[in-house]
Length: 274
Image 1 (cartoon, rainbow, N blue to C red):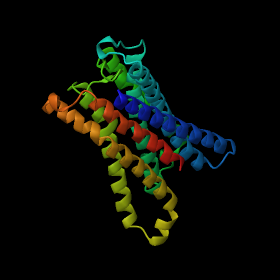
Image 2: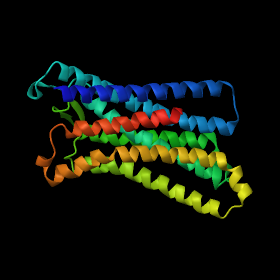
Image 3: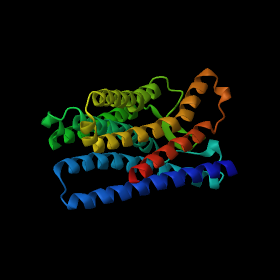
Image 4: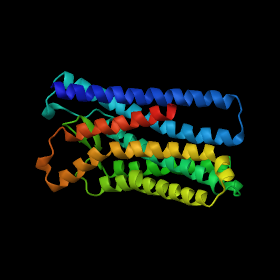
């Protein structure tokens, strides 16, 4: 009883911190945009705002789910008596979609930094219209994949945790979501990072100094990715243990893994604000 309430309270705190940090950062970016800074700076702010919007929505859905979990646990609702609310499956789908959108938005930011550092002569790759298209594609991929899961009823209710998501036991949907939303974006950003490092090694000291600002911002993206990667390890361990021997995994393990994931979402938004 006390463990579940502590678990739910941590989920509420972390998701609220993530929402607040994202909201503050979006507000700051709006104020900066009103001052009509340079076009390059405005484009960088647009991409940052895109990531923060995804982060805000993700933490919002986490907060709503955590509130429902807390209500169920504090009223000691028996697992067999728990029933999903009308929007549980839909909320679980959009939570997964915004998670994918957050990772994909980091890919868009990384690509922009690559163009600012390496491909400086290609002006078309730094145009507003080009990145608006990338942002639209990013959201279409994230939301489109989840709509397919909703149509094929891959998102199910978890009575033990009182939330809806793609179950770890789903050998098709969960690995597919993991590949699209996490693994491929991770490989893409690492590839860009290596390409930038190789490029800078062949540049003069003066040229490196001139590109310090874009490099600093790219490192910012890498640090956020590291936070998301490390804190996602417990959930990946739970996934593998579930398929090796489900008896090794206690019923509350998936809920415990959510603490680390929610903490990473809050940390990324807070780090963005700093």
